[in-house]
Each structure stands twice: as structure tokens, then as C-alpha cells.
Image (cartoon, rainbow, N blue to C red; front, side):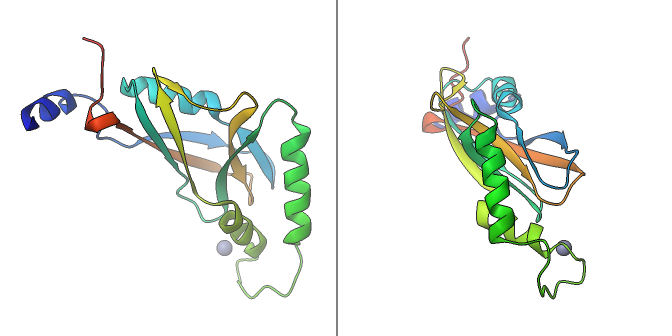
Length: 155
Ligand code: ZN
């Protein structure tokens, strides 16, 4: 069994972490990265498994929510800014404590199932990169794992 797994992994991108860049343009914004994630998954050749997304930043995050009506994520941003105000008696000298707090509230990782090379998302769901201290050049790490450890690539 082991040789099959080794053979399938050989030369594939399955063991690698893929990384793509996100250029943000505002202090606080949610950017729909669903298409970029889907492309990253397809590049691996994975048919069925899971896709793990990780944001390697302390003032940015990732979430899944409605991407049909853009006012939904705008409302999320507005309310997060009320919960964590830009000005308060923060001790962090860099001055971006609100961004650190929002990043922790939203979280730095998401997992999405992959079936037949497609992300399994609800009809109204999209994957959003959440910028809380932009504008900046940001990264999204993508790792896929196949069912039973297999990539299930077509011959
Ligand atoms: Zn800081």
C-alpha cells in the first residue's frame, strides 16, 4: 500500500503548500478570494479531499460568508469596527491593536471540502480574505489533502 501512496505523491504538488498573493487597497476590507482558492486547488490535481487555508499574518484573517450581496460583508466590517473601536486605551505600541484583535476574532484558518476538483461551498458562500491593517501585500497559504491520503488524479 505504501508504494502506491509514494508513487502517487511523487512529482505532484500535493505535499507542497501553495501560496498566492492578495494586494489590499484599504485599511479594512474583505476581498473575495474564492476563485483564487479554486484555481490553487485545481493546480494540485486533487479530485476529492479537503483544502486547508491559512493566513500567515497577525492583522488579517479569513472567513466564509455571503458573496452574492456585497453589503453583507460591508455590514460585518461596520459592526466589527463598533465592537473593536479604532481608538481606545490600547497598550500595543505599534498602534494597530484593533487589527490584531479583529484578526483573532475572525480567525486565521478555514477548511473546505473538495469534491470532483470543486470547492464544496453553499450557494451563497464565498471565501473572503479579511484585511484589518491595510493596504498591504498579503499571502494566503493553501494545502490540500486527498481522501485516504490519495490525490485521486486521473490517469
Ligand atoms: Zn502590531
